[in-house]
Image (cartoon, rainbow, N blue to C red):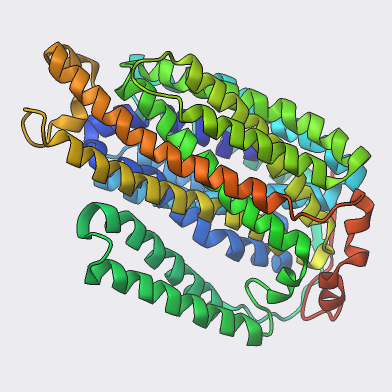
Length: 501
């Protein structure tokens, strides 16, 4: 739970401070990169960490991830430019790629399906506390101390996590020879990096139909094809293709991809709407997201009980409906209404994530045996994170392109247009008609971003309707196609896990 708090606080504290950071270090032009590069680094490493955890055990991989995360946090707090912050966020993301999937895998190792559905409520409570305290802490620190301490805040939680893991979590691994799929890891990393660079630059720097963007898309496609070929012939593939013979994993991966785009999009752009359009402070921008985390916790607790009674399908579909309701509410946001609409949307999105994410994660863990649980859990987290990466990249490119076209009609000095909306003192120096024009331009551009969120939510619900129906016990690893494949024992270890009370 202490390790999960790192990811939870990062998600609520940093997004609160991000508009202020962009204002001080370099403007809105690089805003999406603060999130995208973090997601990029964590996305690329998630399946790698999952495979390593299956081979060497969970503990060393989790400790490595926490150490990298803490190092990145220290560097981010010391960043002196937007470019350096982006580089240091990548370091932080390299650690984050291990923290969440490995902790979730440990839950799957330690608890039975009955216990797991309930224990998720405790872990979801971490997100709830972070959702309530994080925005308030992040906003207060940003407004009254410095945004740098938003990153330094991770240090005590990380140190506490390392201490508890070192003292009380033990595992005994049966050592065997392994052949790491290094080529597969490199091909997958290259494919993801090329794709995200194409999305980030396509709508912002080069354009969509120019050689640079099309070339990056082509490289990404080629590397992805080579990765699939490599995984089919590797002795110990980074992501076993046999996993995707399992309908539970296929549907869960697609749904979590879309849910990730919704979650990261809302977390990134609702605070921007509050601060840029409504002129709120960093504290106020953070409080808008607080209901999302609270609703996530409540939904997760209800989800755990519903899974045991009715199976995974009802919980997943209920989550999809909530996501669509939240995305619909976002479309009602404009510069004339109140922030209540944003709070309502965040609440629905949080409830949707609580039902959807918990039910699908538990379903995937329940559908495979121990030897594949690490990589299976990591694969679902991978798809949710890559969905967030792609979603934020697309939304960021769309926002930059649309606001640039609208602001050409506003008589302001070049290079100052976007920063004015994020800085209270500079807003005060702008005439009311110009300020209203700027706010309307940003609101209209963000409305188009929220259209992307709505589309993702509608597709997510459609995908969830194809999830297998039935009781939770019907999807156990004994009935899974993956189990038969994994029972061949291709170099997988058996690990005994104990937690000292």
